[in-house]
Length: 202
Image (cartoon, rainbow, N blue to C red; front, side):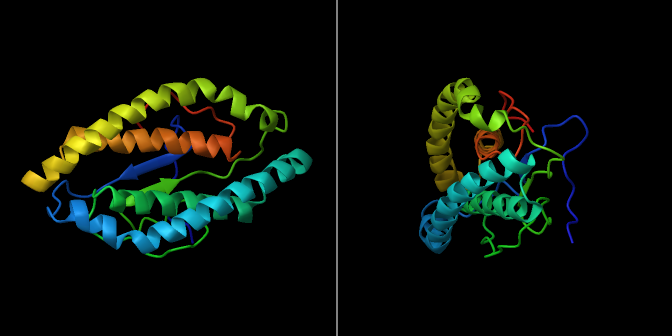
C-alpha cells in the first residue's frame, strides 16, 4: 500500500528530499564510500535498465498516450533507490540504505531519503519527440549549479571530517541540486510532461 504523501498542491509533481540530523560520524567521509559499493553496483545496473525502459515508455506513449502504471512504478523505484544510495555515498546519513526494490510511485516513508512522482493521467505524444531539445537550456544552467554543488561537497567533506557535522546550508544546496537533476532526468525519461523548474527548492 502506498502511504507516503505526494506533492502538495501547486508544487512540482516530482518531490525529492532528505530528513535526518546534520551530525555525521567523521569516519563516514571515507567509510561510506567503501560500504556503499554493493549498492553502487546494483544502482549502475538499474540505471542501464532505466534507459532501456525509457525506450519502452516512448513506444507505449506513442501508441497509448501513457506509460503502463506497473512500468511507471518500476521506473520510479529506480530513481528512488538511486537517490537513497546517493545520500549514503555523499555521507549525508549514517543509516545504511535498504535493498528495497518495491515498485511504487509514492514514497513509502521508510527511509530518510524520500522520492515521489505521481502517475500522470495522460502524456503528450508530441512531446516525446522534442523533450531532449526543450530541456537543453535547463541542462546548461544545471551544469553551473552542479559545479557549485561539487565545490560545496568538497568543503563539506572537510567540514564533516573536522567537526562531524554537515553545514546546513551546504547540505540543502547539494540536495537541491540533485533534486533539480532528478527532475530533469524524469522529464527526459518521459515520466512527466511538467517542465523542470530552474530551481533547487522543492
